[in-house]
Amino acid sequence: MYSEDFREILRSCTVCPRQCGVDRSRQRGYCRAGMVVRAAKAMLHTGEEPCLVGSGGAGAIFFTGCNLGCVYCQNYEISQDGLGWEVDQQRLAQIMLELQQKGASCLDLVTPTPYLAQIAEVLQSIKPRLKIPVVYNCGGYERTETLSWLSGLVDIYLPDLKYKDSALAASYSGCADYFEVACAALQEMFRQVGPVQFTADGRLKKGLLVRHLVLPGAYHDSLELMRWLAAAFPPGAIRVSLMSQYTPTERVAQTASLRRRVTTYEYEKVVEEALALGLQGYSQKRSSSTMALRPEFDGQGI
Image (cartoon, rainbow, N blue to C red; front, side, top):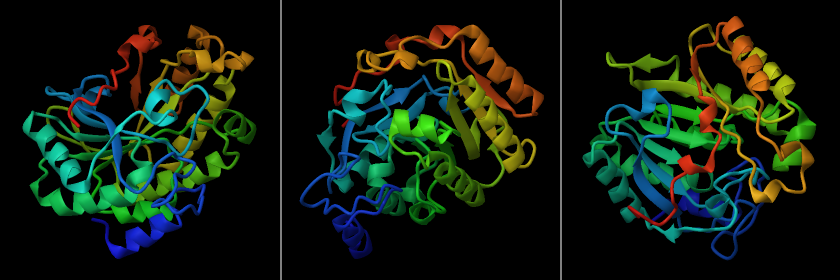
C-alpha cells in the first residue's frame, strides 16, 4: 500500500493547491477522490497529439475525479459525477504494464492529480520495467511541492494552461489563483524534464507539452497566455497544443458565454499569435468540436 508519508498526507489531504485537509480514509475531498484509486477506462487512445500517439496509440488511463471541476468539462461523468471503479495499487501497476505490452507509444495518465501520491508509489515500483515514456496529463492546477514527488518518474508533462484572467478562472473552475499556481507548476515541470526531446520518428520522449483550450469569447485571454509562454521558456524548449474542440454540454445552459462553440476567427487569432511568437506545436481541425471523439467510460481495461 502507501508509504507512511503518503498515508499521512491523505489523512489530511494537501496534495493539490486546494489543500482541503480532509481525511480521505473517511470522506472525499473537493476532487471527489478517496484513499483508493478509481479509474474509468484503460485503452490505446489515438485522440492525443501525434507525437504521443505514435503507431500504437497512447496507453491512456482515465482516472476518476478532478481538482478543478470546470463547468464546461466534457468528461464530467468521471471528473465530477464519480463514474469509475476502484483499482488497488497492484492492479494499477498491472494495467500500466499491460498497456505497454499492447503496443502503447507512451503511458498517458489522464487527470492523475487526485491520486498523485499513489501513482508515484506505483511508478517507483515498476519504472525499471517501463520502456515507454510516462505522461502526466493534468489540468495544470498543481502544487510544486507534490510535483516534486514525481521527479525522475515522469518523462513528459502534458498540463493545461487554461486562464490568465482570475475572474474567468473563478467563474469557470472555482480557482481565482489558477494562473499564478499553474505558472509555478509549469516551471517546476520544466525543471524536472528540461527541453523537449524527440525520437528519430517524431515521437516525444521527454519534455513539456502545454495544452490550451480556446474558449468562446475568451480569445484575448488566450493571447495573453501565449505571450506568457513565449517569455517564460527558452525558444523551442517546449511545445504548445492549441485546441478548438470546446463543445457545449447541457451543463453550461445557465452560462450564456459558454453556450456556443468557438468561432474560426477566435481560434485562428490565437494560432496566429502563437506562430508570431515563435511557439511550436500543434493545432486542431475545426471538426474536433464534437462529443463523438470522447471515449466511452465503460471500465474497459480496468
